[in-house]
Image (cartoon, rainbow, N blue to C red):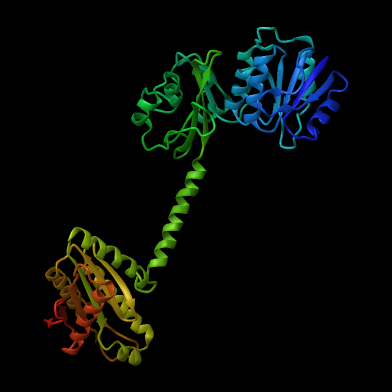
Length: 458
């Protein structure tokens, strides 16, 4: 038996030598290299009983298999990685009569000799029909795959439902094959699966109805195929996330005669992604939060201040700012210690949070200073909010260790409004001047700082 080996692996023909040695007892092997100018393999293919096409790239194997099958009636056997059911089907459609899959070590698991021996007693006819029944070969490929897979024909009847698909869905093949009810494995009411849309050629018009927001996209590797993902609550314990790909099956004239759909359980990946997002959010919050008071920190204030000033100026909306400082805080610390002083700051933060709206944002500006951004707030409303904070904090009491009686603390607060066109430095400095003036006038009060002339008013 004469075999022509078309080697797509390496220029030194290591693959060719290995295969020739493997077949030494049953065939005469002649190796050639393809001409990469598009003219096909080097050498005359006539006079050979079998063509062995060996490579390590599925795309190159598919392209060469198609060209060789068009130019010759000699049976073609492909030796390669064959990554996935869709690739195997494409190779069979391109003209391969059999596929020998290379394992992770580059070996062919002994099937090569079996395939060649079978080819010795059964050659492919001149019309290039496979020397084995194509339907049986497709069934073996699909059912032997560890990837959940099903195949439908042009009338949406299931022709293949492999063991992995049965295990995933809990529905055996004998209940699905020969019916058009494959939707029951995934949905509670009749609707097309992705493979059905591929068969009908209505992917574009129907996709939004069934797969909007579900990661739908054309396949980057398989022409005419589409991908999507969805959550199926009825699968497993608590539901499963599936990533699925549907690819068309075509006849020799290029007409769609069916579709193959593969399913991949990506639940653990989704869970990992969700946990990663939660972790990222936790770290993000930690990076912008003051660890003691729970308010946002000064760094985040700088960012939010710029954003709110830009928004207020763009839309001509009001924006107010509140700056506050604990009165005589150094004396309190010197008298009762920093641990007790921390409790005062924590209580002030609680008072601020209790008196503000959800849209307002409070920050620990530094030391005993706090600042509050009040979007969409006119200065009269900001003054009222500041007064609520001042009064609530004044009513708070503390009992430091060693103190003979309850201790009360107060805060001085400055309030101002944003003037379009001014800098953030001027905006903050004016609110700070208001807090300073409140201290100068006797502490425990709210002062409005006017932007026009810097005039101060109770």
